[in-house]
Image 1 (cartoon, rainbow, N blue to C red):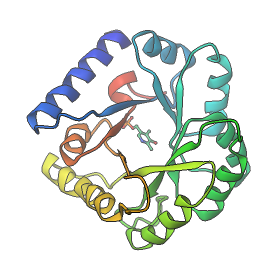
Image 2 (image 1 turned 180 degrees about the vertical axis):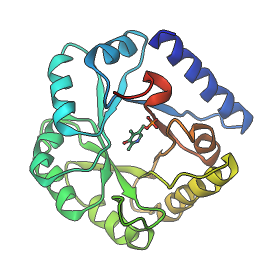
Image 3 (image 1 turned 60 degrees about the vertical axis):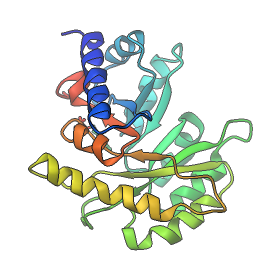
Image 4 (image 1 turned 30 degrees about the vertical axis):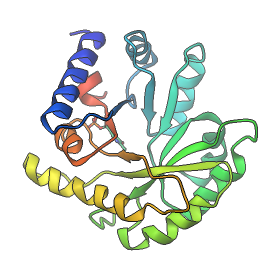
Length: 226
Ligand SMILES: *Cc1c(COP(=O)(O)O)cnc(C)c1O
């Protein structure tokens, strides 16, 4: 099947999931293109896809150079090393993986004054996994307060990569924790947190049911990564 066909089928599955849980807002599809070549991105773009997400900065930069002629909205979704933060701040539209004050500061300081503020999500380590990035739910209020006050950044919401679960209901219960955190962390002095970046190829439907506003889909769109 062509990428255009796969994209259309994926959108249909997402629309069905939205209807089956009576949601009439929108869910945004972020095409996770890590491990895919520039040609695959070009094909998805030609089929109407505009949001693309990358996890490894070196790989992302090369593709950005190759695809400069396309009006892509770039999202960075991987771990951020401090020596890459300045480049990332200059060259993407969204960062989903902010989880340290040092990185938040670097993104803020290096976002060009003439660019729109960088959209950021704070990554949450929902399952307290020592191997995974993310702020623990307990430390989230304090960290959000820091990020909200940084110039050049707009805090849009939360992102998580929960531990794999066996059933769709378990996935749903797990992901619902991020929705509840977001609801509890809205603050009257700031714009509402409008983004819940959750849901990947294996928990897409559960994520939509749990309230995701942006699903990050790699394999279900492009096939297995090389
Ligand atoms: C790779 C990746 C995805 C996409 O995962 P798939 O299972 O291929 O859909 C989503 N989010 C993050 C942070 C990733 O690193």
